[in-house]
Length: 72
Image 1: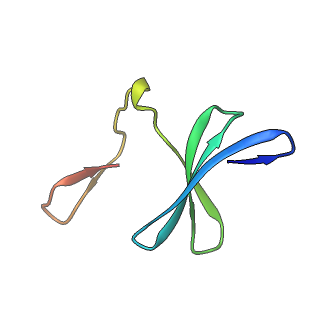
Image 2: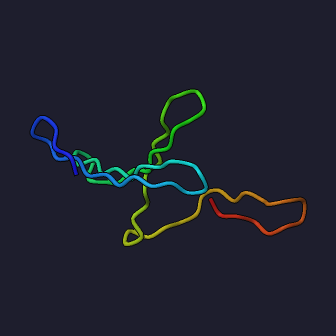
């Protein structure tokens, strides 16, 4: 945890298969975001879903021509 100008910032840094990620809590929104760098130098912020609130998959991406589908 780091503190900056009176606001507390919580984050966890980790690597998966050589890709760096940061799990960051935004206190203004009261939610967590997964941050990952993109090839152009920008950062993609992916909101972390709250399982307690329930989850309904919205996108299904097929894998291969006749393989199983992955819920995204």
